[in-house]
Length: 381
Image 1 (spheres, rainbow, N blue to C red):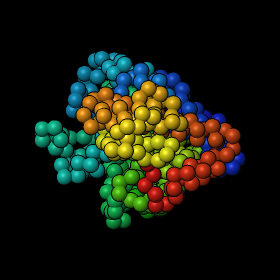
Image 2: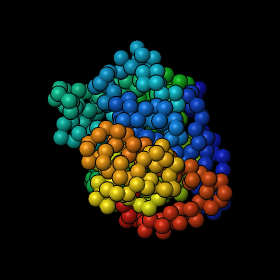
Image 3: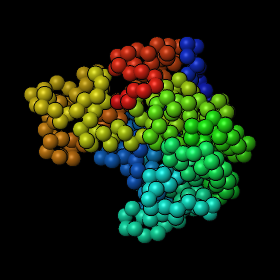
């Protein structure tokens, strides 16, 4: 099989077993573990590509469902693909639309053929199948694309989850057959199975046996379960995946979960969390979570985070950021989003360095102690 992407493990931490790696893609090589900003509608909200480069972003995401509705995959294809359409030069990944099977639960019907949706924009009826998802993603042109799956709710009965996993596996086989850009776009399989160890194993082993996926994602997490349950879901999945292939934990962005995922040999993470909470005035910082709307910052002319090297922290005060937020100024959302994204990207840089120096467990434990986190029930920040 001609591959679009390749992955190599570059160092394994002697203290923890965590790993660093290099992910080679058609649009460049990126270091792992890494956090990927989410650009739902072919843009990371309020952030320019140049700002993404400056903050050290590598891979960013676009959402298949949203790009399908607006502007449409044919428009993007005519522009030369997502990279040219949005002027982003680094690697990109598109999801499959399967999360909308979960998030639009009151608007969809799942059948063997695929999923019937009601558009969240105008209520029109839409149909998304494994073949259609791959067709859209082929036209969007990202370096990495995802197999169409159902993201089941939590909790779910064993019978529901078993039926869902088996259908998702059949969809994975159909997606592999539909993939027209092998060698140009790397297709990932998605492990499902909820909290059930045997179903996670069945899902992972079945995907690996298909022999054509270039990476593997762990899906169905961060959908309402406890952190303890999430970490079990990860454990149940990764131990049945090839060590030499890249692993991607979908939709996870809290600091504690990122570090716990790295400890479990996950290489890629994404989440809307940092930009979403920024738009509501909540910031990640070396001192923990900050709510910029608080009156205590009215006369605070110091940086948002004195330990941060982002554009926002180097140029603007807490007092000014509070003012922008209270006035609902767009610049405020931009600056706060830049900070939160850089905070997580820098956390990944520090984690990689700790792995290379064989001290990742110390790094993780020091971070948890500093921020009063624990491994199983903290909310992170």
